[in-house]
Length: 230
Image 1 (tube, rainbow, N blue to C red):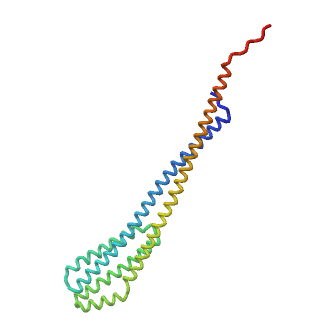
Image 2 (image 1 turned 180 degrees about the horizontal axis):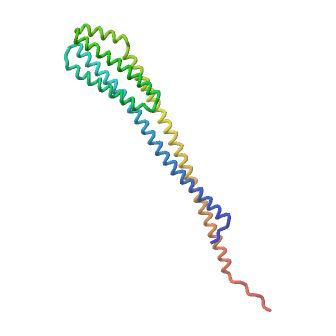
Image 3 (image 1 turned 60 degrees about the horizontal axis):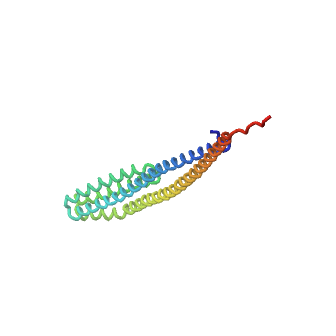
């Protein structure tokens, strides 16, 4: 079968465009999956940071409760939750350091928080020693002196900065993910419509080519006129 030159060229071009469109849709889908995975990991990491942060604050608060119980009563059993809570707080801080390694701003905040918490832990331990050696009155004086240093206020401010940074990062990732989803979706729909049009054009071109071929065959099958007599 011999196609008209224009129709054959047009079909080949249309099929090439359709192939490119199909590859574009596949690429958009693959990139969307990668972006979704990246966004999910980032959101999960931010949630882990916030969880470790709140857990650290809770552990520190629990340690303070154990400290006050020992200072008021002198009962040694209050020191067990006190020590366990301090160790738990240190563990949360270590995990915070690991979780924020990819964020220089958060890393500085966490390092600052570690220094502040270390200072607060020392302050919690001083009244316990004073209570053991000198009694409840001396321990109370140490507590008042440490309270004036406002270390917990500093910790609260740093925790708020870390929480704010992570919340902003979460918001930014969600907005970026929404924009990416809209863009990828629009690209996929556009490429799909383009393939639909291209395949439709190809079908018409092929149909015309076959019609032209049948017409040529019909002309060839007609009987030849008889030669004139004499």
